[in-house]
Image 1 (cartoon, rainbow over the protein chains, first blue to last red):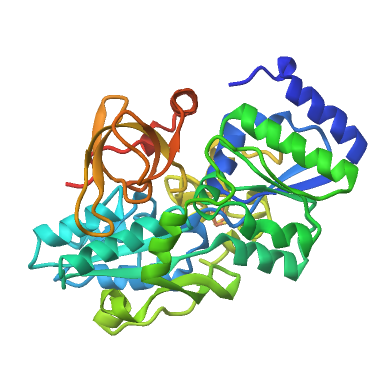
Image 2 (spheres, rainbow over the protein chains, first blue to last red):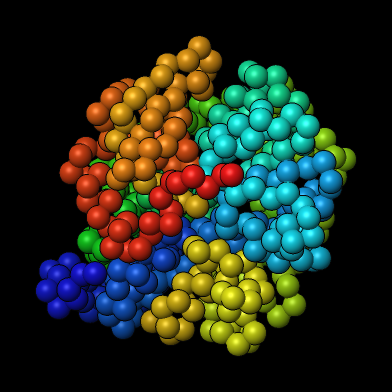
Length: 358
Length: 86
Ligand code: SF4
């Protein structure tokens, strides 16, 4: 934890806040949301500086139709579903993957898509389906897994495609224009892959300041100070405040792997509808790895669980305390929406760090 | 899901396929096999930023140590790769 009174950066932020008056900054990444709370940075913000969580929790932006499809596949006796742990407890129309497991379904939590491929290789009698969710940080792993399965001629491995791309969502939020925003704290690890250039339209087309941020308290404070400087000067720029990890060009090898296996495709986001070319689909040579095709399924309609405002929370239109279920019927032990399930979800972070509007 | 963790490469195995470069990476004592195809420049002794089983970047040692300290202080150790799969 940082020492609030001793941090020169915090003092600089206070001085800048006096100059700008009001500033609404969206932190795009779910890990930033958690880090801002955990490090104490959020509570250091002077009145007027509001940090608004954006669409950066991968589980939270996954449409309900996808969750239902995953649960349906997991109910098949010949299938093992391999997934990142955060997906297991997201409630679907007929219960979560956790419930499928209690009913005898095989759900394996993996750390990497590589583990799912290995699982398929070691269990040739099972159909292994990997839940390919997440942003540009997890997409390279999914792409590499497909290439590996392809090279090994595995015919019992498929992906349920749910990957999302960060920029098209930000574009949609900015184009809709119904959430007033003065600047963006951009995701550190997504940028390790995509680099800086994809963000340029936020500055050039929408005139919003942009700073890529790391995850430590000092890094977050520095990034916020840079944003406030830009806002105060009225000169939006694209800045990299996480240069130790983010290269301007990102990671071209990871992007080449994504481009070999996947192509950009329209995809449905929770509550945001279909956003053009905001997701990834398997390219023709790899389509046999598509779980929907293998099982003859389609992704059903998207909806929020009754009373749940996750759809508005992920767009910065509502805060968790706007939801009537927050901290009453919906808690981390009894989550109703994904924003309470995921460790990166905004509702979970607000619950854990004291339910305030800070 | 979007948090990357630094680790030190202690072994590299080059393969024939396009994504078959793998290695053993040490995360503060926990050793995990990690895909290294996206960091062709990284070798034994280098620190890499690992995400979902793949190294995405090379870090210098100071930055790696600071990041590690932060992860521990912030109690993000559950994000650190372990033997999750049975
Ligand atoms: S508190 Fe629960 S029900 Fe309300 S928006 Fe958050 S996750 Fe949904």
